[in-house]
Length: 188
Image 1 (cartoon, rainbow, N blue to C red):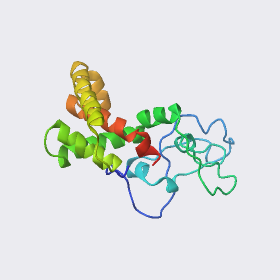
Image 2: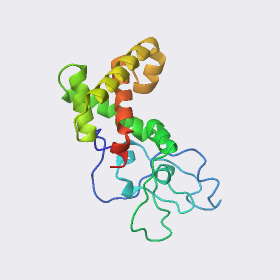
Image 3: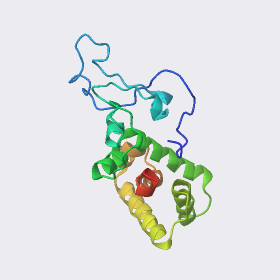
């Protein structure tokens, strides 16, 4: 969220409820409870730090559970770190992560100068805090070109991803989504 510029860094305030799958609380909620039905927040509340996320003891936020959040049943001195395919799937498809990729792609259009290779260099360095090597630069450039061609042929998918028919923006969103999913970005 920080890299994309979406992070709301305001301190304090009530807990927030980011989106999660429908019906998740119904299976564990008491019928008379005020938390039997989950109603997600919207707007800027969705982009607050995870420390402000509402936790239902019997059904923790699925995104946080997937990314190794402790169960909160006892004190945890050190969080375990894993790197699983399921985590990668979450990072590539969950709405908050897609929103971050879209916003980061918009940042590229506004803040990065030069041709595609210079923009790739800028976003790679912004996301990883290091410069890309030649192999990484070539791979990302190839992904950008292939994605641009793909979204030019499939404007309906482009519209679904970024809300318009701009194949270049959709391709940059895919590049940003890929970079945000790198192991060195997620766990280092």
